[in-house]
Length: 509
Figure (cartoon, one colour):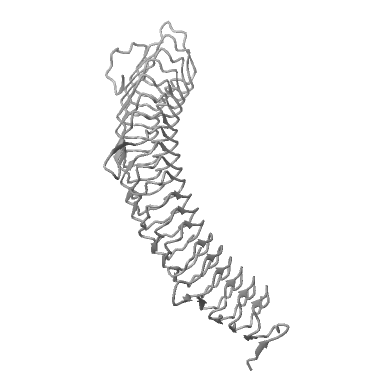
C-alpha cells in the first residue's frame, strides 16, 4: 500500500509521496535529503525558497510540482542526484538557480520556464545542470539572466543552445564536454569567452562571433573537431588568442583573424590537421602555435590592412616566432619572413619536410637548436652576415642541402649542426670559428671537400664520422687538435686542398 504524508513533523524514512502545508514558505536545508523512497513532491503556492540539499539524493523522485508563482530561489544542490526526475517547470518569478541545483539528474529531459512575459531568472549557479545527460535543450531567451556560472551545463546532453543577448560573459567550462552540442548562438553583446567553455564539444560545427567580443581564454574551443571555419575578421577589439584556444580542431580549414590581433599563444592551433593556409597580422607567435598542422601549406604575414573607413593601416611588425611554432607542418613549402623578425626559436620549423627555401632577415643573430631539423626538402637558406651562431642540430637531417658556406664572422656552431645532411658536398669553416664540435657533420655521406682555417683549434668527437666520400681535408701546418674518432668511417680520406670559390647554396649578403 502506497502511503501518503501531509508534512507537519519529522520526515518518516518510508515517505513516498509529499504534499506540503500551504503555510510553509521555505523548505529548509537538507529537509528531505536521502529520502530514497520519495516518488513525488508537490509544493504549494507560498513556498519562496527551496534551500540547500533539500531534496538531494532523492533517487526515486520522478514527479515534481513547484509553486506556480511564489518560488524565487532553488539553492545549492537542492535536487542534486534526483536521478529519476524527468521534467521541471520553473515559474516566471524564479530568480536564482543555485550551484549544482540539478547536477547529476541523469534523466532530466526538460527544463521549462512557464511565463507569459520575460522571466525573472537572473542567476544560474556553478555546475547547476552538470551531468544532465538527457537534457537536450533549454530556452533562456525569455529570461533576464545576466550571470551563468562556470560549468553550469558541463557534461550535459545539450544539442542546441541560444543564449540571451544581455549575457556578456561565458564563464569557464560552461559547456565543457557537451559532446552532443551542435548548434550554438552566442549572445549579441558577448564580451568574454572563459577558460575551456566549449572544451571537447566535438560536434559544434559553426560559430558566429559578435563584434563586441574582446577576450577569449585558454582552451575555449579545444577539441571542437567539427568546426570548419573561424571568422574573427570583424572582431577588432580582440588582441590576443590564448594558449590551446583551437588546439585539436581537426576539421578546421579556414581561419580569418582580425587586424587588431597582436599575439597568438602557445599551441593555439596545434594539431589543426586540416588547416591549409592562414594570414597572420601579429607581432608574436608563441610556442607550438601551429605545431602538427600537417596540411598547412601557405603562411602569409600581413604588412598592413584597410580599416572600416577604408584607410590603410600598418600591422604590428612580426618580432618573434617562438619554439616549435611550425613544428611538423609537413605541407609548408615556402615561408616569407618579414624583415622585422628578430627571433626564430628552437624547433621553429623542425619537421617541415617540404620546405624548400627560407630567407632570414638581418635581425636574426643566431639559429637556435633544431631550427630546421628534419627539413628534408630544404635546398636554399638565405641569411645576412649578422648571423653569429648556429646552435645544436640547426640543420640536422636536411638531406637535400648541398652546400654550406657559413658567413664570415660566425662565432660558433653547435654539435650535430649538419648531422645527416646527406647531399652536402662542400663546406668552408670560417676563420672566426675555433672548434668543429662533436658530430657536427656526422653522416654527411656525400661530403667530399672541407676547408679548415688556420685558426681552428679542435675537431670534436665523430665530427666527420661516416662521411664516406670525404677525400680532402687540409690540416697541413695547422695546430688543430682532432679526436681519435673525428674521422671514423671516412674511408677515402687523403691530404688535399679544397678548391676555392665554390658555388653557394647558403647565400650570404
